[in-house]
Image 1 (tube, rainbow, N blue to C red):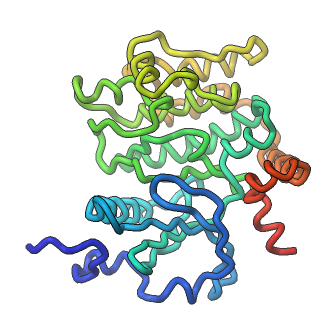
Image 2 (tube, rainbow, N blue to C red; image 1 turned 45 degrees about the vertical axis):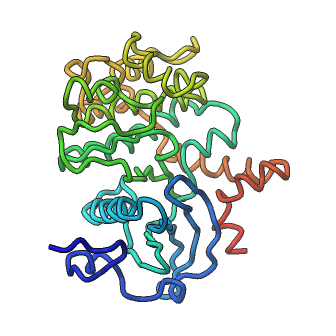
Length: 322
């Protein structure tokens, strides 16, 4: 078989992944709401359905174009197979000028954006509600034999209706167990760091990352964030597991974080088991995340000019409607 060049749709299996229309004619009002190493994410309106969507644009030009193209295909295939209320909804993919336009449902912002706006930790009830959505999404992924491998506040999105969505499956593993060194250092489980020497790991690495994310939401930064990435990796692998620092968190929350951060994967519960923990099952207000989003929007409107420009993406739907 000859190797297809990046962007080639001669292979029918690849061609079926992409919509044949010109995305510039279908989507309008594109405004950037985020970016990363892959490219940028845009707010957009679909002319056909009048629906608001998010579009992740990923170029496969330049250096390592074949690897970029393969990564794009992997992410599309991964997203197409997902169907769960707590994973981001995939809506299609288009090609335009050596760039893939990955179209997904639109979310207001990430848990990371929210703590950035308020400049204070989240409340325990809010963290509990977010963890509940994350664990439901993870239980679904793990039941399919998938591993997310990059759980952190920046990849946990919230919709206008307060629904938690797992996003950014660029690092995800399609097979379990896996053995590659993938993820964001500060949130990485010890067994991922040691995988090169000691072999394989499973979906429990996502549970560890959720425990670190709880500390991030409760203290605004993950442990070891003041170190460079290499030092942090060494400490995660060698030291005792981190825990919540402030004295005013409840014993139930501490217990939940400690369970997530068991250093031995054999002692760490899986995502389904954690849904039965009392931190998940205790009574919460049904509107806790809707209220959090409303307060976040109000806070963004009051930010000074510089910070407002940085965070106005949270008000994108409101400002475009008016």
